[in-house]
Image 1 (cartoon, one colour):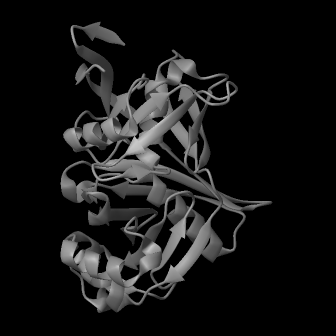
Image 2 (tube, rainbow, N blue to C red; image 1 turned 180 degrees about the vertical axis):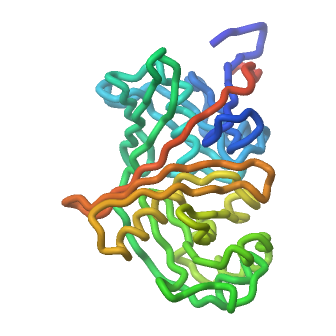
Length: 302
């Protein structure tokens, strides 16, 4: 950290995550050394950047781990999130031990695996979600559809009803047709109606829509309660979706490519896997990143 007069300067970088093309993917701001910032300041900074998430890196509580990572949307702190871990892992790749980083987060320990090409250039960062799949309450199509400006008939229930699933961060997962996915739009008022009617949601749940598109999936995520109308790439929603699909299939393992952010002009490719383990279904998500900016943010000292 650098100091100048009464101001304290905190370096940051921004990256586009889940893409190999600058200005694609999901943008992320990373503060590689957030020592000296309070939680309230981190929240204010995340609101200033106004990205879907901003991550702050602190020393680990356990020296065997790489770092403690705190993740904020413009509205609140998150227990776990996908693209911030992939992007933060990419930014901290030089700290990896044998290609692995271990991040301490509210939801648990997050493993980030770094891969490089033959020349040593970064290729991908893949995270293992901190928890096995957990399935909570289900919803009727009539409850969920208005959140995305859709009709109840647009929700496909042949495989499963809309339901809340988590591997560290809960989302409502719902299947729709490709046509319905294309015309979906977040409805803030309808989202608030559902959140207020279900206290167990605690205002923290986004809606993840998906549609089958040949061998891959197309997805979109709306989360007005989190301060994010729509997200270009949501690893913490893609992972429970992969785990749910494996759960429904009855297979031992599987892999799915998910394309998100197309409707926002920020196409993002999320590569997911899921496998059955002794403690449940575990999932991973990974992809590439592109660094975009470097700078520092000034905070009044003291």
